[in-house]
Amino acid sequence: DGGITQSPKYLFRKEGQNVTLSCEQNLNHDAMYWYRQDPGQGLRLIYYSQIVNDFQKGDIAEGYSVSREKKESFPLTVTSAQKNPTAFYLCASRQRGFTDTQYFGPGTRLTVL
Amino acid sequence: AQSVTQLDSQVPVFEEAPVELRCNYSSSVSVYLFWYVQYPNQGLQLLLKYLSGSTLVKGINGFEAEFNKSQTSFHLRKPSVHISDTAEYFCAVTPSDTDKLIFGTGTRLQVFP
Image 1 (cartoon, chains in turn purple, cyan):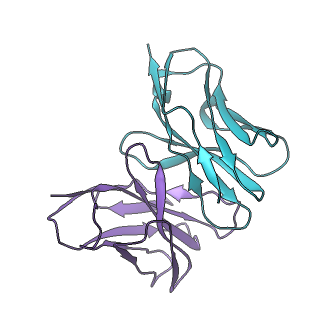
Image 2 (image 1 turned 90 degrees about the vertical axis):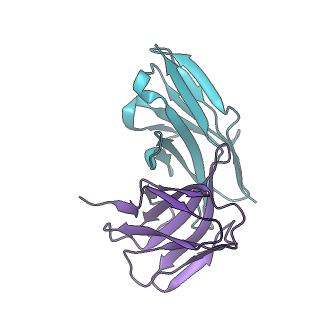
């Protein structure tokens, strides 16, 4: 089955710890995205990558970091500098064209205690 | 800057009744328009999209939307809803000069028996 995998589904961390969220896709898509979802705020773009070894900041990149060493993988690190990291994180991918559909993974719910 | 407005945060409706979820956007360039659905604790799934051509777009699960350029709207409709349509619905746009997807804040559709 082709799709996007995010792991784990639920993640708990202590305040001050860095944590890395996994995102893998086997759709052979060029572009990948990370969004943060909070109740009543919709989805906000954290980082995106249109090609391997290249990525751009989205609207709320502060306190996050990413890497894109392989086409199929786009991990997101939530650092201790992120003031309010508890949220639902969604990864997406699409072919590079603007008109192509973004396909979403199932999400990771991060809770920082 | 582009923006998407979903005026209704919640829409309650009885089963088999019609429903309309409203979406308006603001953009200085042409846009591509999307509606996504999100079931609890899951990722987003594409319902339909408008790229060009006929302004009435049909999607999955009996949903349709109409693009109105003069009113900058892309309202989602379904003539008869089911309990299983209970979910969060997001309107989104991709401006023609960017690779980003800009989301509205979502509308929670609650279908009652």
